[in-house]
Length: 136
Image 1 (cartoon, one colour):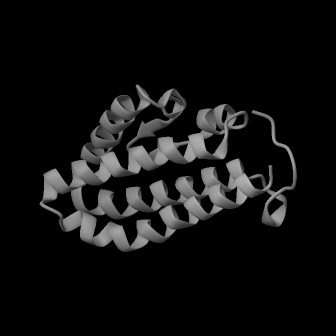
Image 2 (cartoon, rainbow, N blue to C red):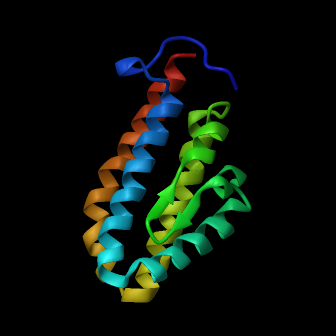
């Protein structure tokens, strides 16, 4: 999909804003959870979630996970031609799946720490999607 109409605030397209929002959220999730379970275990959880959710949202398979964190370079390229809603749906599914894995692993302890940080960003992504639909 090519971008048409007006650009969002700060001169960025809605797709870029959604990608930045989820990039920031996943980086913060990585920082918090790695302190609790370690980078190796967290890397396995992220890799597993990406493989599973990537079956429905193939652009996520471009994410690279290492003990240092998540690399978005490949995803950035793929998302340039995608609709904001499609990007949001993929990342939202990934975040939900990670929350499920964290809940199973720690009986909700990690989720209590992450949810207050994640929820506002998920709502912001929905707001961006809603506004971008009005621009067409």
